[in-house]
Amino acid sequence: MSNIPTAVNNSGACYVTHKEVQAALAQARVSHPNTLFSVEYRPFQLDPTLPTGKPMCWIACYEANLGEEKMENIGEALQERGRRVGIDL
Image (cartoon, rainbow, N blue to C red; front, side):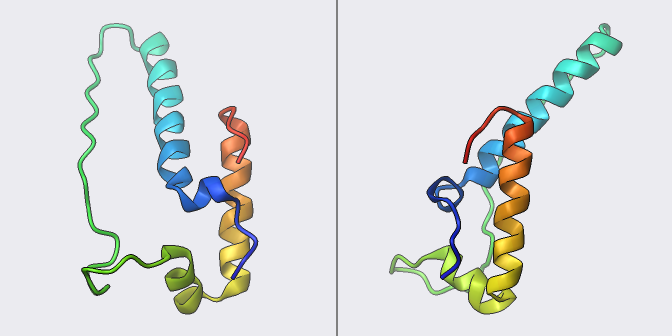
């Protein structure tokens, strides 16, 4: 399995994206102070074809579908995105 940071395994992508959205909203509030923004977080299923009832490692599933090199690239890109919003993955 790829050498992907533990934080990425624990939904680090969601947290990084959340921080990116917060930063974008903060910028928008400065440049558009009279505009109201509303963000609604909703659950979704990443892959409805996965079997239910037993835990499985999503990293291993994605790596099987995408390949180790692609997963390494995704991990590196996520770490860089995290650094830009103050998260050390």
